[in-house]
Structure formats: structure tokens, C-alpha cells
Length: 169
Image (cartoon, rainbow, N blue to C red; front, top):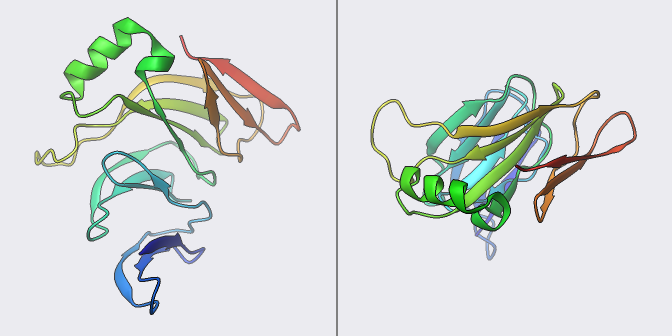
């Protein structure tokens, strides 16, 4: 199947052969960015300020995190060890239970860019775990474009018509 997000806040998994719903998730506000594949599930951002990870099998929410303002850009998932250096890779391996070395770059319209370490997938402790913020940077303009990570750099466009570049230390 394929997963699509609608401006109405609905996220749907549908079969390609007959368009039948496999599952759906209803966010409480608009979703304007495409869902993003991550190790643990599908990342969905919403105008309710939340980044969510949905289970691929049924659309249930595995975890969510408030990023402080509406989110309109698809997050970027990248392999952390190759970008963050050996010290973080060891910490990440220990904290993430060895389940992967993937990090998430996400930005909110409130001029903040985050680098996040997702929680261990399948954790059953209530409440659901949230990602850990490894770094954040304030921009001088509203952020609406999806971030991209190359080597140790996070790049993104903003409402000031500039390309912003931040170093992952």
C-alpha cells in the first residue's frame, strides 16, 4: 500500500490495486507535509505542533513530540553515526538499544531546527517515549522547507529567502 496525508488531518494507508483503506489516523489539525519513512514507523508532522511516529501496520501512534509551533515540512531521517562522530554513536547505540543509528532533522515554523534521537522502537512503557533533542538552532526567519542533511551540515530554506546551513557538532 501507500500512505498519504491530507490537509484535513487524515493520514491514510491505502491499497494500490483497489484504493481500499488499510488504516487511517486522524490528526487534530492540518497535515501539509508528506509522511516520512523512519526505522520505527512513519513520521507525520502537523499544525498542532506535534511530530508523530505512526506504526506501519495499523497507524497507531508510537510516540509524539511537541516542537513548539506548527510544522509544515517533512522531517529528514539520516544515519547518525556517519554525521555525529564516534562519541555520539556510542551514546546513541547505548540509549537506542542498538536498534539503529538513525536521527531525525525537523523544523517548526517557529524558527527552530531540531536534531532528534528517536526512542527505542517497541518500548511499552506508558506514556509512550518521546525523542531526545540532541541539538537545536534558532533561525531568524520562519522555517517552512524540509531540512536536508549532508555530511555534518543541516541545510534548509526559510521565509527570509536564504539558505540556512547549520553544523552538527
